Image (cartoon, rainbow, N blue to C red; front, top):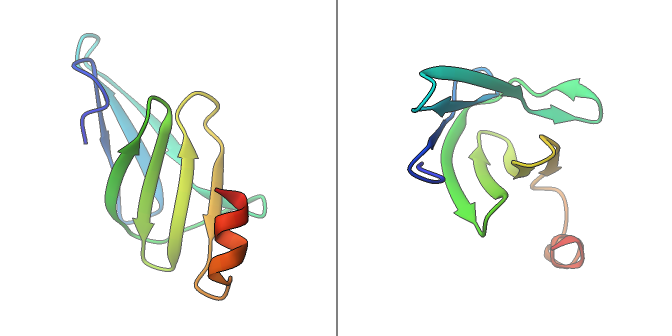
Length: 88
């Protein structure tokens, strides 16, 4: 997904989110973490929400990723809809 004319975000099979800087021709990788551990699940889809939030549809849940801080918040299917609404 294009965040801007400068960056393209791509997912991987190993739970790694990659940012490609088109101007510099460089990649930066962000491992998705859940409870401090690398979360090795496939990233199926990426959606941009505003200027700094990416939503990742993953094999085992949904992830809210902050592009400014590099932090991720994992939502698992076992969480109720109300818990998710409270966080959003």
